[in-house]
Image (cartoon, rainbow, N blue to C red; front, side):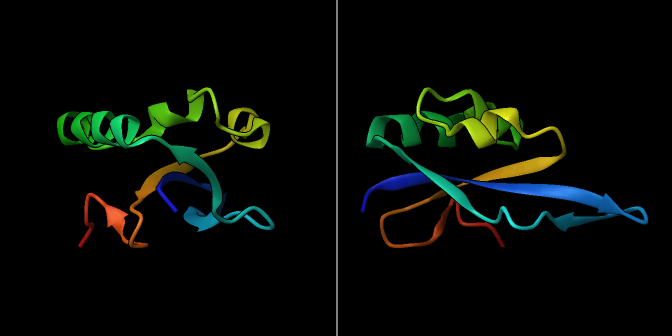
Length: 84
């Protein structure tokens, strides 16, 4: 497995942000070059939400109406950049 973008839809409940069900972790593939560019952009901006418009992002990702976050998962299964 190569790099993947992982979309985590979220929702608000009583002022708290929670993972939205049943959507939890929708993945799509990224090339090594796409992952490198995204990680570089993350270093500048601190977020990867622009990947929502990636050409291979699923329709459910592009159409999600609420809050969300996106992470990059490396071939070894770790989030990149490594988040602490």
